[in-house]
Image 1: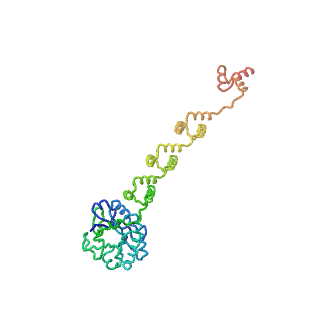
Image 2: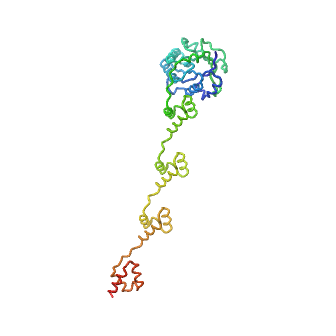
Length: 396
């Protein structure tokens, strides 16, 4: 049997896996990361690639690019790979990729530590290396499945097969192509072994229990699930309801709405601008502009003084004279006529009132005239005509 395969990593960019499946590719080997178990060394596209292949039913295996120079580092690299593949059903082995020149003297030991840890976790271990490495540095590791690189002229087509015994996958070019992958070069492989059939009963670590929408929404806010279409695709591939989770995210992300009273205070403090800018910003934030502006106007208006207090200010010259006074008082919401009446009353000097005896003497001196004018003038001045006239008659 021969199965056409590709191997990919972050260097191949964002892959359209629907197109890859439609192209007839039979399997995928994807990089999960490189080096020791450090999150920053995870392949940034691994989760998306694994989720998409799982969603579409594309059989896949995984590899980790090794930098291990001792067995401790090899164990950390195994932990790295196992952390990332947890929860995924692999249809192909979990490989260590050894090709760094600094590893040549210890390659066999590194491979054994990595592969035994993978085997202990329930996965089939494998080793990737080129033909030269297999023939010169990796003797004694034949118990693990072999993935061999040999490009020949590297023109995108298979050439002469590797001169390595019992290999299961041949990487024959780095200049292949496939629908759905836009990168300039793509590694192409031929697999000669039915791994999906063999690994159908393997028991990798079980997938974690599905989390609640609330928990996933919290993870989205923490940046775990990416943004935009990437977030949507990853949530959908993991079996979650994107719309339901996004609704929770939107609700959590929205700031708590303040009361109209609080917003009015912010308006007075200058936070929301002026005029149309203020109106547009308040409306965009979901607030009732008219209701808030009414509160602002109420708060901005100075406390109104009594007519008596304003009349005193008029007399002190605060409100000007004539039409200017009238206009200013009216504009400030005061009753000009009522205030002016108080002003007039306060401004007119009250004459000191004389005694009835003194007024009677003035009558006799002719100052108050004769009746009926005398009576009218005395009463207009606030005197009792009958009392005054009785004194006048007596004095006569």
